[in-house]
Length: 280
Length: 328
Image (tube, rainbow over all chains, first blue to last red):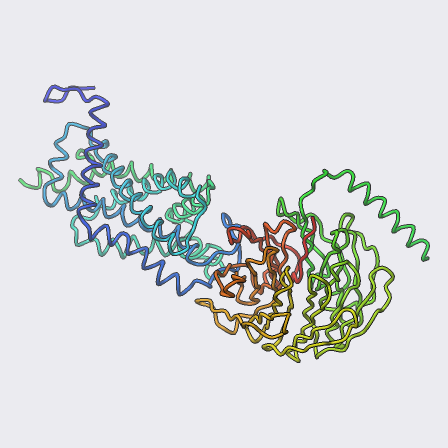
């Protein structure tokens, strides 16, 4: 390992301190932004309390794994809403990087001697931890709404959340390298969040989709978000869905590679804008 | 011919004994479910929650019950106008009993004999000696008799007539009606609490359950139901089961796809449990840990954990499951 200009060695503890620092900052930012915390919680709860309540008797026609009996619609959409929290959070925390870039905080981070991929992964991890916090808060509120999961599910869902959060966060990083300004969040909503959320198994089981439109079913089947939802759904019932886990893990690695590439000053998009060359 | 039947029956019984011996000493309870449209009876193992076997029965099997020792299963074969008796261990037809036309539901005297059978098309309750198949009495009741309940001491038998909208109380000593109680429209099921101090009658179209005091034969309270997101017309109470300790009653609500849990002290509904479609009848396991509901339109039975009041699993059976009885 080469010695940076300061002369100190990048040791493992140093890496950890750096990662913890980034996570801490992200956590602090999240907690201080009460609006964000509230909206992260209110968004899925609106779906649960209002949307799902209207449709509560829609399902109950067929039993699909991991369910062993009939479930109310509230129970069915809960894993989808959990994944939605992570989708929003993944994109939001990555878009906060756009904000960081605008206000210059990014520069401070990037002058750190640690490799850029490591900074990105730390940032990603910070985002995932924040989303896990949001998810458990949501599940706690949902419990009072009689969405009671088996106790083992609350534990088993943690690794699933880490994996799906990893995929959605990495996807957000790729997005944030594409979008330059905060104002673009609206277009992210339109072109990324909504299509991904609706064209998945979050709101309706895929056999239902297949009955009404085969094309839509194909879109849902190719949508990685579907697999994040299913991974979480099975985990919430203490079960492991290997295929969904594989798809989510592969997508996560592909997105991460793309993000590292996009943020690499010598090869990616960062070089082309916002860098010192632009300022000249 | 008769001798041959006897011979084969006894051979079957012997074979059954052999099978029973081969089975582990403490086998798990089994649920017998009558499948109205398949003309079969599904046998569900209550431990593994899997269908062990499907047995061909007479046409349109509906009412189903067991002898007090759990060794014999009685089935109303409605379109064959007879009651069929099966050996619970071998699943072989042991004998058939006379029933009068179109038997729908019946109740066995707590002593195991006689059998009181409601004849839906004939406005009669037929009383049959299960030992020798003798006709003991035919009791004229209201139009379209269905629900059959018997008090734990066996003194009173109650029949409900769907069109007359009455519960008819019969003194089992004389086989005469001693009281008629007007309830809400289309009464389906009559069920006594185990202490004999309450009689519950469900009214399918009326959407209520009348709780009657057998001391006076007067209605104490009519329980009504309300489920958010479910149309009131879909709430059609049918099957009623009360726990042995008398603390909880479970009521199947037909096309509402719910089983209501009622506190028997306050007579208030405490919870609605989502089960399959058009839930019809209910049955407890002997230890009352589980309750099984037959779901006629989704062709399955739902298993309810009685203590936690949660539906744990739904198991596919034959088409249009109607009744259920569980033996040790």
